[in-house]
Image (cartoon, rainbow, N blue to C red):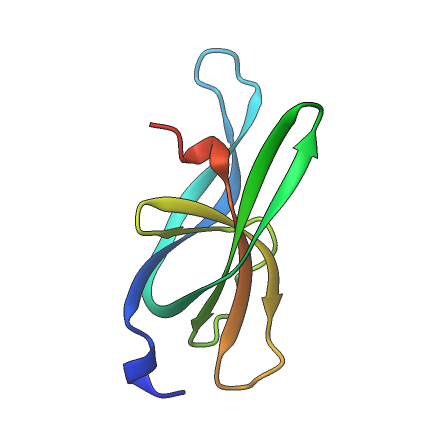
Amino acid sequence: MEAGKLHNRIKLFRPVIIRDDKTGAPVKSFEFVIEVWADAEPISNRKIRTGEQGQVVETMLFTLRPRDEITVDWQVVFQQRTFTVRAPDRSQRDRLLITAEADIRHDRV
């Protein structure tokens, strides 16, 4: 893997379960792990139809140096957008390929 190909900064977050301070109920949250260099490539925009609504799901392919801890449901923040990891591919020794989908719930302003 050539360092010059990794020209984007991404932040990686792992899912954690925390307790709500008021109710004590378990709540899913995300904990910052690290910021790394990566390549980011859009691979698709597919439409999902639910009733009368059309929704576009943006899928990205992130290439970074190998990391063993990244699994499905981790989050990648790239250019102030949140993506959910759908498939980490470790088939190549020198890199990790992450297929991730834009999470529109986190993109609202």
